[in-house]
Picture 1 (spheres, one colour):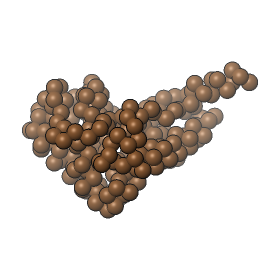
Picture 2 (cartoon, helix red, strand yellow):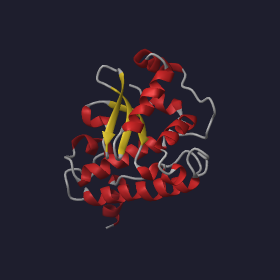
Picture 3 (cartoon, rainbow, N blue to C red):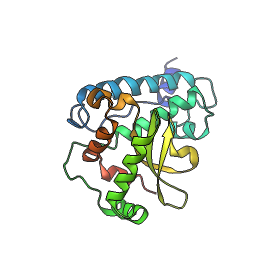
Picture 4 (tube, one colour):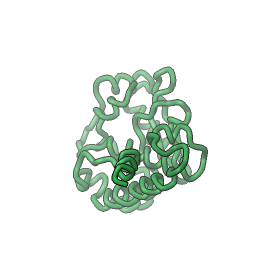
Length: 204
């Protein structure tokens, strides 16, 4: 019994550990939003996914592999949201005014969007114009080019063979406590907390 429980623990999908305190992103994202978004929404996705995959072909697989292979439906929805939120919460740091990318990620943004400023405009536009709930993503296509996509609901660029490097949640639970219906203001504020070192580390 002990060995069985240990194996289930090892094989289960777990919550990411935040690299910052729950109030560290204020005033961009409040402690209350982190408590709900990370502590309740993400925890529910993780718990539900672990329940759904028991006894299926996806049991014991990584969340990335599940997202790539699962058909549309409850398993994919919860796996997608789990993976998306892991990317999301681990790409932030305490607010810094004038926070700008440098190094390889800056070079790649200039190469593929003309300038960092133009990238920000296009990315914010994607997030602002996605109808309903979903995600705005920056990813690398198969040729290594950076592309912006709008993914509805639990969508992730992995489903299209791309490598995701930056994802912004535009479901209302991500911003409503702090910004109400002002999604555009929320998107504009997020640039102050993007950890560009993390984003660059996701490049292939």
